[in-house]
Image 1 (tube, rainbow, N blue to C red):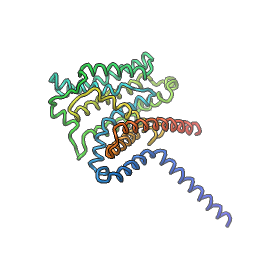
Image 2: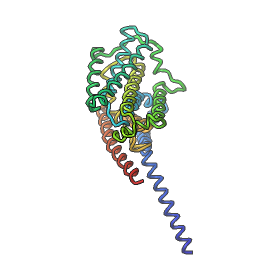
Image 3: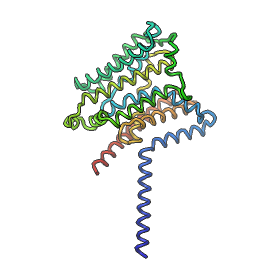
Image 4: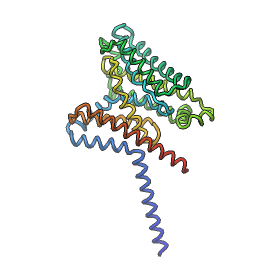
Length: 340
């Protein structure tokens, strides 16, 4: 009889322990998703007629598509343990170049777009040469590159908004809506799928994570640090250029100064992403959750009539929180790995 009671008690303790582990794992991996749901629920309760509607949610997703692309652009660079401060100026210069080439030089839009993408690739190569070839800090190298590109963009555009008659086929790049979903959202999903496949299922992705985890050990293992960084920086430049083309198609204009406003939200989303799905690691789907956490929060604040500076306060606070939690989760992950 006593054996049966003790067995039941042990079984109950095991069940409670298993349930606690499941809850802890769910919160650890999907806590940010829960936060997004809570934010949506709060603003839906405060603005039931305007916030929780299909059109508004699609509008938020479309409005955040450029931020999402730019946040995805820097994931690879963060994975290899570097920083890129030039991706937003790549965005700015490509936007004014593409729009300017079409409206002022009469260039065919596919050629203008190819030149814009080439600018992104060349910038990525230059950043790699500076950081790996010349051993310049990525922070300093990309800050300098950002300043150069920003100056060229302002010089080319004259500091004004470039606009004019754009080809309908170029405008359609962002304005079509297959299945009722606007094209920018589709671009985000395609880019996210590509990056996820690269980072999670290819040797290149594994090498990038190895370099970011321990560069010296990666070199001893025969992994090319140069190649891993080249892939990361070129992807950053290429996706930033793509975001610029999509944004130009959305807005129908090009303006260099618009780029600076994307730096903080993109990094905030990337660091937020490192706290969810696969905590302690920069990852694609977590980054998208971070983007739409920012997007739903800002949209809710706008609908409640808050001043624009409150949105900056929100983004800055989220970035600080994200970096803190990301570093904590990285230490926890390292401790778990050491304990196994």
